[in-house]
Image 1 (cartoon, rainbow, N blue to C red):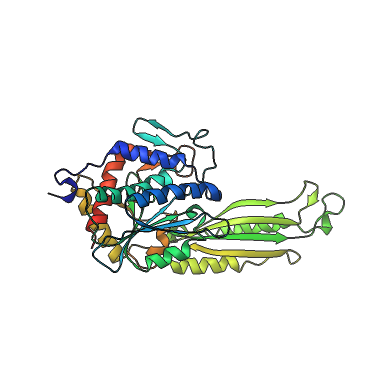
Image 2 (image 1 turned 60 degrees about the vertical axis):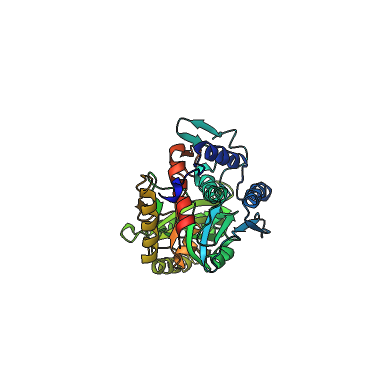
Length: 384
């Protein structure tokens, strides 16, 4: 009889999952609101201590909220263990749960800001450990949870801590949301971000147009150049996402700024295209062009050890009639990029199924919670 159905074992309760996830979502925590994210960190600390995890809370830097690291202390085995990554920040401003996407249940859907990306998945990982704790069962390996406070902005404060913990891990499990109907993630594109700033010469647009040097014109030419670098066959995409500049319709604009997003499949492509962007030169010699930025998250590809981890998870899921599949590649980044790029077997997208990440129609499917939490339980307990 598989461990998830031992006699007298408390069953995984869908309603308990719904209630716990809802309580987390009710604690709104936009990345740039340090106090709000720290309220979420307070909740996480309390729940970790309730199940006997040793908690370390690292004060945030540069205005970010605190990082919470929780470790199991009751394993008989030392050495590399399981690192669980989950973030507790969201992209939605305070008030979204009562306004544009109220926390509510409609049939099989549970709505709320940040519920899909990724408070549900973060909660499920901790719930799985709590489930084992209730039945006095232990993972084979030490387990470390990291609750990241600023993943949605690229983990600038916590990256060094994530990579340090990943270097000590045998496996990494990531609670990011499921993809395409319940698939896990085994590879992600890398992401780079750049800022282009052009400085020209202002002039009256009517009386002395020839004396001006337009910063907007300069940036516009680079927009076309950058967008033309997109190569779908190589999986390389570039997008100029925002532009701002100028002071008035009748003024030749002195300043303009653009933000650029780059996604790549391989580290080699990342290096090549980063250099292309960083080495851009002004078209107009009288305009100054400054380019800054670089790789934010390295790409990670499925390795042999990563495939073995997926197959282990799939076999465990088949025991409860859940045919786990994976999506070959996704363009979105996560903290799993860091561990995956380091060569640590990483299984990402282990969170709830649903849709609407970063939108005002964000929801999870309640029917996905129990089978996916069983997956968490089995991996935490059985991985060796």
